[in-house]
Image (tube, rainbow over all chains, first blue to last red; front, side, top):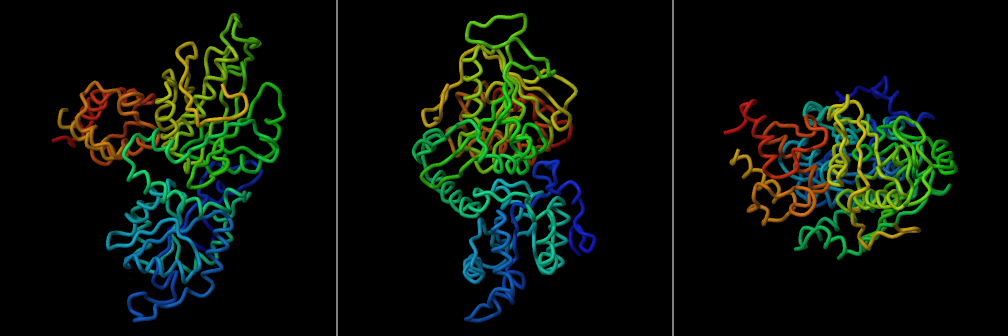
Amino acid sequence: MTGRGSGAGPAGADTAGPGPAGGTPGAHMVKCVVWDIDNTLLSGVYLESGAQPPPAAPGMAALLRELAARGIVHAIASRNPPAAAEYAARAAGCEFAAAECGWGRKSEAVARIAAELGIAVGALAFVDDDPYERAEVSFALPPVLVLSPEDMTEAVGWPEFSPSVITPEARRRGAMYAQRRRRLAAERSFGGSREEFLRSIGTRVTVAPAGPPDVPRLHELSQRTSQFNSAGAGLTEEAFRSLISSPGRGVLTVRLRDTFGDDGLVGASVVEHGVTESGMTGPEVTGPGVTGPEPGTWTVRLLMMSCRAMGRGVIEALLAWLARSAAREGAQAMQIPCALNDRNVPLRLALAAAGFRAPDGPGTGTSGRAVFQLDLRGPQPELPDWVTGPGRP
Amino acid sequence: MTAVAGEIRRILAAVTGRPELLGIPADTPLFGAGVALDSLTGTLLLREIRRQFSVDVAAEDLNLDALATLGTLAAFVGARAAVGGEAD
């Protein structure tokens, strides 16, 4: 009765495996488990238990803790009143990043949770003891991994729930979603523009060259990001290590914090200086006065950002930083080859907003590849003063 | 087409939380000065257009040129929604 079958293991495990190839970014890795309350998180029915609601289901607290330690966050979708979610959180000793309580369809509650947390529905698992609810979510949201509570006990060993690296950012993920909820509430009650809001909450974006200690997080980001990932494929730790030390290339990291909390390393770019998309090395870029038969071009091989940083000025800051750096070094154009799919539309929106354009090529909006280009000979994009780092352009 | 523009104004006001966008003229740019659409509000806008008009702007428009102004977006959506019988 589960969405993807049990016994033989999860379908698509071959693409989800965090093997040496790095895997497809975010493909089928579960980032959030959405739990039912009655007979799932709790060992009974909340409203039928009189004054003393039932305790957490046996082993539930340990299971939730284990998943949270792997960077997987928890949410609740229940037909109970909101007080039941608060009780379940206390009973299970766990923080829930989102809770949807009400009488609507569970699939709609799950979709709202995905939207609130900024997580693709394909990165959600849904656990419910009621076969009808499981069928309804499976039918309405095919990408969701749908499991019974018994399946979940076994599934904790599946690749979907086993990220290959667990970074400090991952362990803090549950707390960061709670910060996010408080930040969103503050933004809703804030009167001014988003720029003014970001400034008012002390947003700080720090851009810096990557070093060896950043490698595990860079690898993790490359695997987990899909909405903001230009390459459409993950990179191994080995690949990042070699990129960091190779001449003519730059790996930039982006860190984000504000008064609500520190999100750590949320984005990065891999840039080749003076190299065109065809792989031909362009003329040596020596300074602002550089001239040559071909214009110097910076090629961004990978641009990625955690969807947690969406709407917080980070991707805009990184694109402006790259454009200004390239222009300062005498480059006349910057290009970003992008894999096109139905998940990275947010990245295309950011590129369009920053003035990038792709000449019509073989790619359509949802498949293939396109090279987005920015002419650097025009006016430079603004870089807000809350964006800092060594060599700020 | 004007009905589509009105509906898009309502969506823009909702996703940005800025009711003043209900009164913007058709030639208002959606990126940069004006509406200042970013990847978050842009994603919410395209999702809502797909839901209400069954038009997938991102799938058809590689460079998202349709998002140049309110007017270009309304024309893009209006032309396709009419074909699908979704308008009016």
